[in-house]
Length: 271
Ligand code: HPA
Image (tube, rainbow, N blue to C red; front, side, top):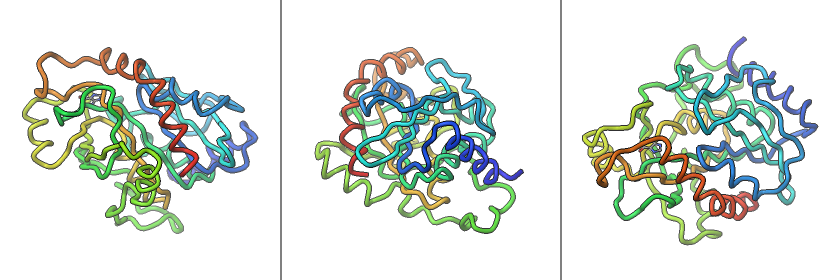
């Protein structure tokens, strides 16, 4: 079965298990965002993503695989907790399968959230930045391999408006103090060297992480509008004194949880 058919099978299972006929918005929850997302309301259902076809289990502390369904005003929102990454040994198709599934289940707006390192010394841990564009340094693409089957969009997909200008303008109108930055997506799982961060800065990036870029490409390819929100959990390597560690990333996420939730509660209704 090709990855697109697999996502449709998973979407049918999702609709069946949740009773939600069609989703409008999907939010992929990165480290730290899960706790805050409860501010969107009480989920009408909470299912294990491992019960859906094609989903692989996360192996990272702080990520558990679940899909929560929440109604926000007139919108059905899918909250996807427990992202999977390339660095866990997953293929690009496996990494983007949750995004393809929620789009197959109807979502036309996809919010990709993440925890990231900050390259700009003026933006410290706890700051949320809207992604204006990305630099994909993973050397791969979810579109690599056999051409997408008929009906699934061009293989040579245009990414000149990857992080939707329209959605960014809507968010800006609602949260005027939010700033934007370019996200550089590395493969990890090691953190970057100071030299790699200097390279990313020279390239124009101000955020650095190990997720998001492949999911954004896959979502755009399927015609969804993409919004990216990054929580800076630490200064990137070499930006500030001291070593980086995963615990610090998780703690910064936990500390920011209530403000992330408040932000999502303001953003989702305007999407
Ligand atoms: N680098 C890459 N990924 C990250 C970082 C970082 O500094 N912080 C959180 N995720």
